[in-house]
Image 1 (cartoon, rainbow, N blue to C red):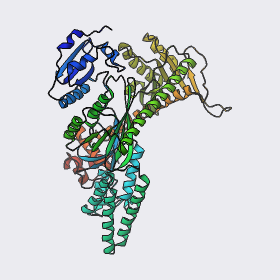
Image 2 (image 1 turned 60 degrees about the vertical axis):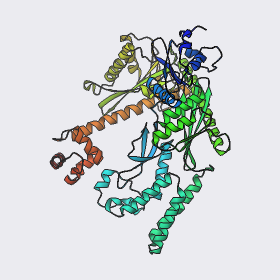
Image 3 (image 1 turned 90 degrees about the vertical axis):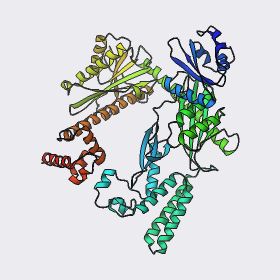
Image 4 (image 1 turned 180 degrees about the vertical axis):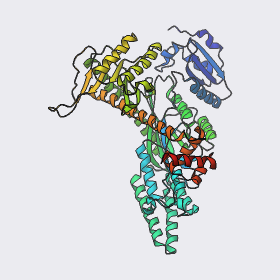
Length: 612
């Protein structure tokens, strides 16, 4: 096998520890690796049969140059490798994309009367609060918060509502809140509920029950039997919940289990969570074109993923051994200022858990492959049924949305290989002169999208227009005008209801075909087209609502003398809404950061004049 790389240079590399960067002719970094002996490791890539990894032949066939950076220790090599992978995003490294978000329960640290909040975190969370999670679904997070709100009566109102309230809300009567907003409890009493909530989220249910029992006996001794009964009910609810949620894990604490499954260069990694001794969920991470060995992928994942975590577990258990576990322990422990252990259990209950993580990685891998195979079959059927010239690998769909002919907007959504491709979604504001002109708006958007697509060689295989024959003909004129012949175009519309049917059917309009095509109601092709069209509707309506909301805020707030963008934002953040701003007193407005008494009087006068 011939190489672009001059293999005679291999003996000139250092035998010390370091990092190597493999680049192509254009200088693009294809792969970053580390080694205790750089020369020996790099040589292995070019000796036939020495490195059996599936992607290595594809990698080395493209390598033109190899740069090296020599370091003093394995720890430095690991850190540098991680930094370079993040910086260069090499094609053949397992790169953890930073667009994943996760749900967590947040408890603010600095607020005198903190409340539970469900937040979605991307990357590293701020350190001004405690975070518990991650939760794998919004339902799981909401169920947890609902349980906690039944057990521990913390406030549920917003900060703005908390400031305005002058009497308790109905939650106080339902025993779901102890009304700190109007002084129905002491700060110490409220803090006790907060501390017990935190302990419960940490899995310290025994300690919580002991605290509640002490409080119950205290109220009973003071002959305050109603309060004692409330604590007794809470204890019973916790004991029932713990019994219901119990999972047979013979040790407590917080741990993550990392399992991996691989076929050739496609890798699935499963992260399972144990929190407070209970198995609470899992996440799947997928990597393609991975030239790294399994242990290297796990090492890379640990450094990339836990670098972003706000509160990592005390223990990370691996289904496969990694050579630099002790070094990774040191790096993560220093990063988070707490001891984090990284283990490869070989027997016992912990081994069973990491084996379960590996099974989940394999199951998810084959489920995804099955789903992809089904989508591929459906796309071939779509090409056949609609007589398309091209296999519809990428589909783009357009839809307009308006309110009574006003606030007209348009959107484009994309599906790649039959799945949503939200990174390609686009929104378009329509020229005001075209308000109410659905055809004109669609024409403007198609010209904007495909003139640019033609210039950048970024065209889809199939374009779907939401509309009838007229919309299709208009779109075909645009593509003819732009001299684009490599894109299929169809239109999708609902058939007007017929008395002999009583229900509507989807009509598919094709170029140069007089009558629309009607697919069977159980056709997978029809389901896919409806999924695409419904997603375009959803995205268009949401965008249109946002535009209306912005216009409402602009018309009601931006005309207030002396209130610029900074003060407007402060008012909305502090008070929560324009309605709350209208109802706020001068004293309440003065509590908003940056709002002077003069500003507050101007705001009150403005709304008083405009509400007449």
